Image (tube, rainbow, N blue to C red; front, side, top):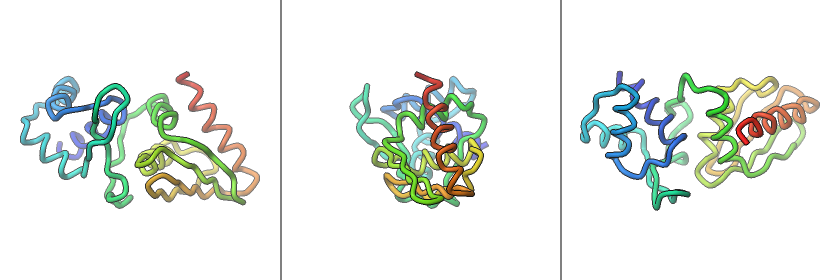
Length: 161
């Protein structure tokens, strides 16, 4: 139950600008989770969420990507490609080929979330991703496949425009 609730929290903060613990508790309640403020507070701490500037709100919750090892990151489940597309659209700044690597620049603090979305989407050709704070290195099977990966990502991003 805790793992599913925390996966839901990650999905919520990726798709909504959540400014307060009360807002997060409301989203969780709408998703069918009965939570207290103490539970929400504990989940925020365990997920290492932090406040970052928002677009429509002063501050919003986000993953503290630089401090969450990939092996410990809670990966969202049950998301549609359109939800991932939204994350990719908000997070990706640029993409460039370097041999059989795809170097993706992201908004600051978004690299691990975007990399997790790329892994979950299982895009043909991508073997794996390594993310820092604002850069992702994607290993692609062959140098020739990199351009196809870029085009697939661009098409996915364009789905929500």
